[in-house]
Amino acid sequence: MKIEVNKIEGGVTAAKGFQAASTAAQIKYQGRTDMAMIYSKSPCAAAGTFTRNVVKAAPVIWDRDLVRSGKPMHAVVVNSGIANACTGQEGMDYCRQTAEAAASLLDIPADSVLVGSTGVIGFQLPMDRIRAGVASLVPALGDDTVHGTDAAKAIMTTDTHKKECACRFEIDGKTVTIGGMSKGSGMIHPNMCTMLAYVTTDAAVEASVLQTAVSAIVDETFNMISVDGDTSTNDTLLVLANGEAGNDKIEKAEGPAYEALYSALHTICRDLAMQMAGDGEGCTKLIEVTVQGMDTLEHARTLAKSVITSSLTKAAVYGSDANWGRILCALGYAGVDFDPNDLQLYFIDEEKGVDDPQGRMLIFTDGAGADFSEEEATKLLKREKVTLLAQFHMGEETATAWGCDLTHEYVSINADYRS
Image 1 (tube, rainbow, N blue to C red):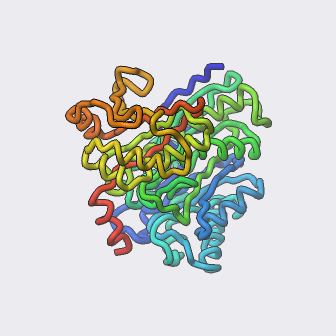
Image 2 (cartoon, helix red, strand yellow):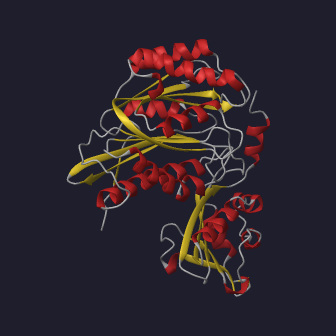
Image 3 (spheres, rainbow, N blue to C red):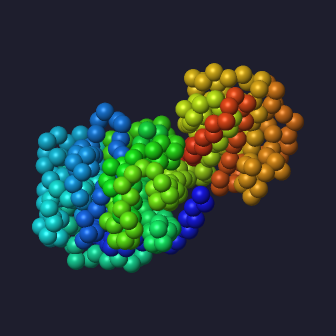
């Protein structure tokens, strides 16, 4: 079954019934917005995935428990600047107080309000500013593209630009829309990278079915990116579905309607994941690594992630150095057994693509370096997106991972992040 998913302009306000707002609460930053709200008057089915770091921020615990409760959700309140992580019971109390402040103004239950925080670890939220921020967010809510974009900008920390996308498709003759926004630039690593991501849809879907889709999709998208190998305390992906598209509710994780929803949600999550990988702190290039012909999907994913997390490979890409030895080394220590004499490595010309033989530059084969033009390889490595292909001959499984180059600027940014 061919599923047509069309990308459109917008983000979290693209889907019917969702509003957003932003405000400058001066939590840490001056001269910019630093709080955002997403709201749906119609109750939403909610699904989410969260950091696997043992040290979890207070908002992660708050959101995880609400999502697991199965209760309908109405709103999300997010602040940037302070992470509300490692803040003890006081931090948990501040999550509750934030939710209660929003609930009172929106006339909804406090346990239908999700919260999010991103920024410096170990500092308590200035609740006077948070409450004032909530009070200014509610009357500022709007459902147009500008409101969604402004919300995406408000949740940024070291990000250099906002990250949002949206798409439209059909279920049972009904037009369904999905939109999303995310932030993430540093402390990003697989197994829920350091990020906040919020996705909204007007599809009608059972919460448990939505969770099934989200849990599967995150392994193919957000868990396949890395910037610096550090897994955050605050990683959160939340998906809200308010049912305003009017399709028959999707109650099983199977069938054409579910497949259409899954495909569109995958499109959004993949797009946001790539945007984050390409905006890694101090980076100049997005790196995409595809592994083909592996015996298991787990092995394919492990190998692809090993390359994009290799500091030496990332540094070589930054310098536009066609040092295939860095790539081969990263594959070799990934913990997957393979024969290096039965492997080909390629640089890919993005204009032609991985599947076009004319777009492949062979750099390693039969256990040794291939005869290739260093000059032409350098040209490919100087592009904003650098694509690598590792072709094995052990099976049919394929996986793709995304990362970025490692630059002097990354160290500069993180050497004085708290100041």
